Length: 544
Image (cartoon, rainbow, N blue to C red; front, side):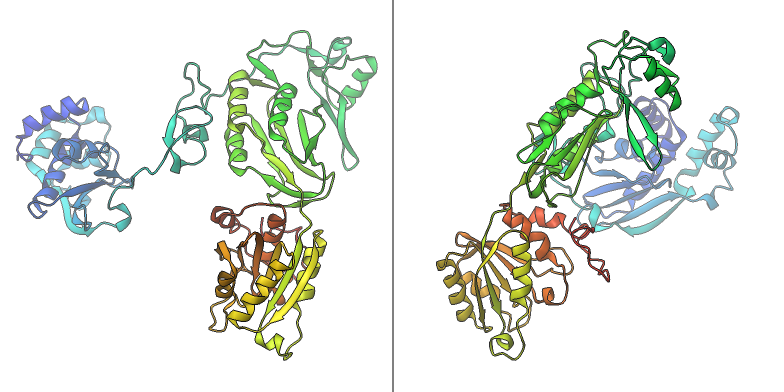
């Protein structure tokens, strides 16, 4: 039985030239592809979906224009020996698969397909003869419709340069290329530090601790008293004396590295590495002791403010082998002297290549900063006809006042107006004229017909606004600019819940951050309040 325009022998030869040998799966795949082609309407522009990575993709590439290179063939590794050809616009097509139930007539094909006998015991000539005679009769053929997500081709929107390896890559893959994210298949490449390259480290000479008297300590050696203390018994660079030997033996250190047999320049000591990392990581408002302890350096807030982290740089660095940086949450309000992060090289010695790679991943820095919170002149504008008319007592002004005062700002003006577009606009403008540089409006941010606050703010000069934050409670929060002042629109849920999106956004505004939609989108993770009986915010995951 022919395979399309080819005799069986001709196709065997093409398979050998293309695949290296005439694999049975490729020969059967030829019949499968031709069976699918024959059942498509004439003139159909089609693509292919292959469910196995073994042999079958080569049959598609030999007999159609579909290939992985032009993205007309998609290989979905489902482990089933099946191929579908389908209209590239509608997804309507034909699926052809080997039908196990139809193999009983063909013992050699069944033995090969079901792996019933080792390859050495297979009768290749008889197997080929059965394949030629059976053709596509061993297959099930049925109509299918491909999911829309597989139709069409994605196009690269941007090409970025990886800051680690320096090669170009699709920007949609992330802040560094996928190879530098750990998917690199190489264990070695000349002049390149590969992601999976795992050097064993330098060979350091080990000596009994009693023979190390008078020698320098290679690294900090830690002693731990469970529940009481943890700290270095001996520090890198110290010269061991007899007393040190006793102390080290008491904590189980009976052997040490010989400080007189250190590796060459192709290796970087953990202390030297972490000093270089810290210098590049620390930005304004960050302080640290330049002398590492136990191979690490911790960072502290130099003054009160909000911790700001370059999250992309943090990810790039932690994707680099043999290094780490752990931080508190971005956006956390820090008192002076509070610890915010810690970094170290993980092995005692890091290869020079990996050290350079990690530095490159950091970019020009900084990664960590503490942004001081400005003392804002806050105007609190309460909207609601029921409050304006005195039908209910206002609770918003004291709630918002306590939050802004707690962060060091002052309440400069307050006003209560009805749900009237013109009245809200007039009151907002009055606050700007009165010197407010942050206006907080309350309520009127939802979808009810009486909620006109946002429209009124537009009339007052609202611009660059972002409406809606992926957090609960507080989704209807608004941030933007009211002429030159900052503005935050707080939904009515803040009357009921002690903590909402307002509490997360407010410090960022006071710290001078120009929030983007991406910044707000990141708040979705951790943006679902646990509604604890006793609220412990900010010592909880909300908004982190």
